[in-house]
Length: 356
Image 1 (cartoon, rainbow, N blue to C red):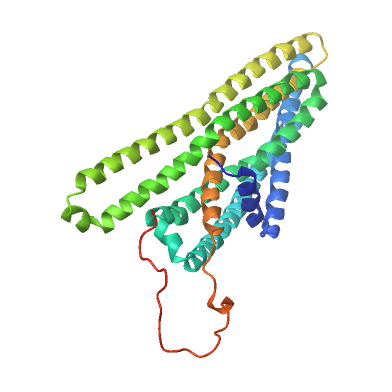
Image 2: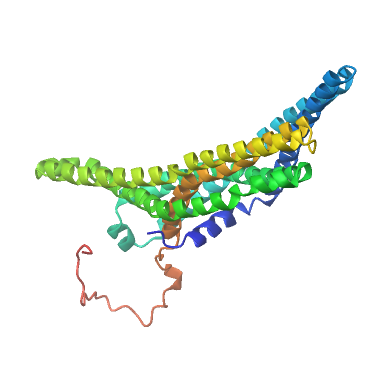
């Protein structure tokens, strides 16, 4: 089971906080880009009102229409450029942090006592240095950007929806608590499976590494069938853990899409009734429907990130477990030699054996 998810999350983000300048730039770019994207649907709704007013009145004001559409296009293009720059900064920050983590793990391996290396399979150690750190980098890369922009989008879209129609906004907000409860239930069930997945990955890597390096010994003592059977069992365990983790966490996405579509239908019906009663314009309803889509999309993305984030935290726990291992004491810390050596070595209560 997962030992301490909160500690792993805090230690992971503590490493990223060392890049304060990049974090500030990423947040600023995300705020500006999301703000531009949030204003876009309102401008498009205003364009619809210009067209409707022109059709029912004395003609379309093409100057105002072109100006509004040009402004919307400019906002979307600028937001796309800022999002690209934000992704570049985030990638640089994460990869630099993971590079420093690899270097720290390498130094840690040189300070570990031989007893730790003796009781830990080399394949599992290699898996922590390579697979687990790479998985941490990929998980952070995929989740941090969407997490930041998703939360900002939810806040900005909610503000615009309440500005257009508090009633429709209240209807759309109902999906939030339902989504949170659903993600909490799925997270609790899939967390254990992701820990098992990466534990079995390390064990399988250990078996493969030992079988390849000791291939001559395996052949000489006729242990091929035994090694193949152990591989089959470990491979099956890894399959079951991976399948369970991915399947359970994967159920969130379809459920969130269903809630989003249901919410979209309710907003469209209520918005149509408000237009019929003259309390809203067609452009406002169009903008609100776009906002409803923008509102549910970050929730769906956040739900889909649950499995990726949990997988990364499971790997982080394995890496931090290695970093927290007890080190070999330094020779400088040993007590000074007392007296003069007598030129004799005594072995008292000494044994040579592997730890069972």
